[in-house]
Image (cartoon, rainbow, N blue to C red):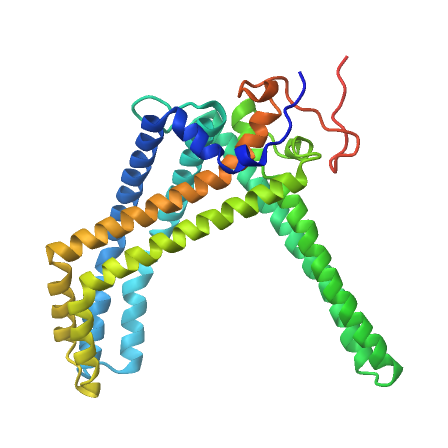
Length: 351
């Protein structure tokens, strides 16, 4: 079946097209993600909260001159070290959280599918996406060290030649220019790889198999449309995000204005600052219903924008994956084969 031509408009607004098909499911997925994020934050606060409380008490004691610098540092380490071990639990939980919702959004963007009741799962899609994300890390690490090596060689050669003076200085300048051009070439190469491999997560979910370098062939001939789609989508989302952020900041500034005025008065006292007065001002402001409502609404709006930004970003790769499957109807066909010109070589033939 022939592959559909690439439609930049569809690519940019693919998330909103899918949203229009199943608005209730998409909204439920967002609400469920926000609830899970709130639980994860609450868990982090419960685990790390005692450390912050002890640090405030330590700051108050130090402000009254009750501790030497050595004692203060010793107590800081004594407070923080036991709680830093929780990071070994929080970090993998956060990663699993990101992968499960990445899979859920990609199922929605590629297949229009929202799992019933609990929209997230942890199964084949999620495990395969872990593999895809790890491959991204490996490719990024190889690219980073390769770029650093190339630029370092050119830069070191330029410095050594410049130290010789005379003609060597001119040669050194030329070497520096080459190093800069090599840096630009590396950036261009990284951009090409990023765009050509961007459809890997969506292909993985759509095919139900681990796909990574197959994204290279799925984006063959549409690099520029993909690049334009990402740039335009990012610009649109930044305009929306900037406007939303400005409105939220104004609302929060109005809600926290009394506290800010109290802090200004405290700052004018100079060395006579009373830590108890600062804490009392913070507690008083944060206990006001208007302040709490403004904080909650502001964080919900900003989190909603963050989720939408990530969904829009994934939707471009999802559109391209859907485009190369079954005429763009979202049904997975046979797995793609790697062409002879692929960086990983051609796929083996059967028979």
